[in-house]
Image 1 (cartoon, rainbow, N blue to C red):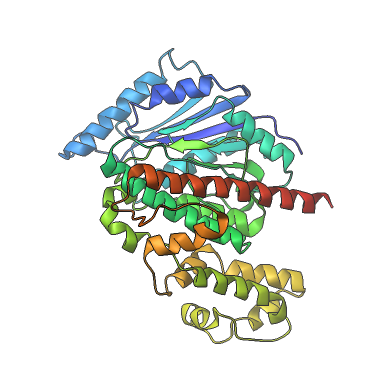
Image 2: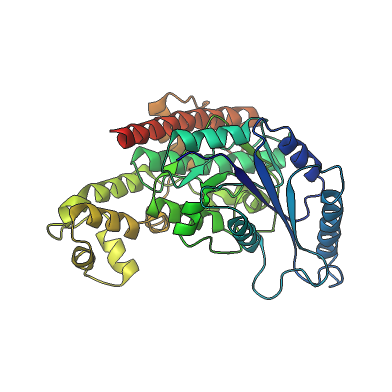
Amino acid sequence: MRYGHISVAIPVLAEYENIPHLVESLRCQSFKNFDIYICVNNREGWADDGDEQHCAMYHDNQKTLQYLQSPDAGLPLTVIDRSSPQKGWQGKQHGVGWARKILFETISNNHNSNELIVSLDADTSFSNTYLESVIEAFNSHPGHSALCVPYYHPLSGNDTLDRPLLRYETYMRHYLLNFMAISSPYAFSALGSAMAFPLWAYKRVGGITPLQGGEDFYLMQKFAKTGQLLLSCNDIVKPQGRTSARVPFGTGPAIAKGIDSMDIAYPLYPIEGFRAVADTYAMFPHLYDEDVETPMSDFLRQQLKTDDLWQPLRKNFKTRELFIHACSERVDGLRILQFLKTFPLRRAEAELETLCKPHGISMPTDFNFRSSSIADIDKVRNGLFHLEQKMRFEQDNTIKESFQR
């Protein structure tokens, strides 16, 4: 199978200042065989509900719609208007999850199953070869269900924004690197601005669940359960690091919380927790033959409210291979996160050193997210980024070799 066409899907809410740069970045792509779908969206009634912020976002959306309908856009563009009067979201169906769902369904109705969907956000920067890199990645790794694109948040020069941004990105990279180290099938970072997938894989998992936030995580988890994730391509995306209250969690809300909230909201989970997950994985083949205690057994009995964790899976999955896969579906990314939260936490800086030291990532003496310079924190971030890039490529190449054997 080879892919030859891309549909770019972009939800937009109050992004007028970013739209011209986005359009220009797409116009300059080296790969030209693509369409663009943009959903400009807000709640119905924001124009006159008395909320100053709602009104401003509505009028920003209207400026975006006018711009996209002008000759300046000059691209193969389909605009979905969920902003104008009588077209805005109503009831519980609103937000970025619904915007992505509408976009993906529109693409599904207009293209065949071999279409590639590239999900972006309007505040994301990328190189002129980005779409070319995505399609080459899929054509080099046939059969993969989705691509988690490497990401990197540019700094703003504002300490109040950059310090929590770097702390949050460190949390994300620490989490992913530990997942990759234990060969978890859920080793991915889910950003709506940094994912791509074939339409056939999207249809196979039943589409996206249109949540107010986290819809990207649950979609990627579906892909991980039903196929193989691709973690690298020859490019990265650069989402803006900015405060936001548009979604309940993610980069924007994390930055808005500020540095003092990070240790509670975004802890660096101890290595012992990840090792306990790895030890549990290693026992799945033996569990096919008989019940044995795993490091996660007590936790799973409590979470699943049953003492019979494995016999139902043995009954329903008759081969060892199918049973092991069923076990990994049961102990999924969300379940593992819940398990990690049961471990006592150490200082984030101490936990980070546990990861950095074996890999030769230098941490300054007395390193502290609250008091160290932005330059020193950024050096550590960059060390994690380069380690992650290396591990992404190694994992993808290992999987590619296994497919070819």
